[in-house]
Image 1 (tube, rainbow, N blue to C red):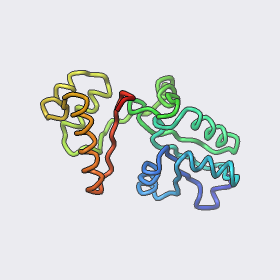
Image 2: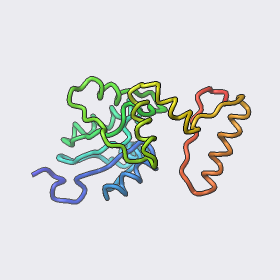
Image 3: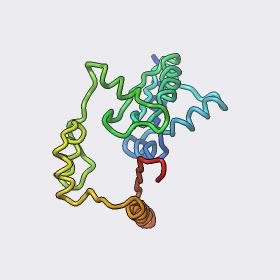
Image 4: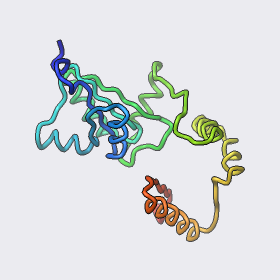
Amino acid sequence: MPNCMMRSCCVVGLAPSAVAAQVLADDLGIATENTVKWWQNHLIHGTTFETGQLVIIDEASLAGTLSLDRITHLAQDAGAKVLLVGDYAQLQSVDAGGAFAMIARDRSDTPELVDVHRFTHAWEKTASLELRHRRTQAIDTYLAKQRIHDGNTEAMTDTAYNVWRADRDAGLVSVLIAEPTKT
């Protein structure tokens, strides 16, 4: 019988961010950690995987390629199984990334998300899936629902920051994404 089958630590969850790791912990009721912190614990304290253990890496599209490579090789060497979970069409890693999207694209048995759960309005579910599949008519929906705004750089930067700050002050988790390095 695999080593971990005798204990409650058979499943470990990892994610590229502490927030994603906490969501995974809350959803599955398992021990989780941020991938960078887990790797540091491995280097400093020798933390490792066990034979038969299931290692779930959530939000894998956000994990850097080198991070995924190190962790999956360590798991493989220990006899653990790695399950990469995420959306290859979602934001990619801040670090050099793309491995998850490549794996998802190159495998014929990659499961696909078919039910969207995290939107309040039905139109958001439909529009997000249209964007995911590169159907540009989704942009018309976002325009009609007043979800796309324009303006000069300074006004847009100020507005984006103020909306982010208002969310933060209200205790909400908010993400501000800016493409140009000037912003």
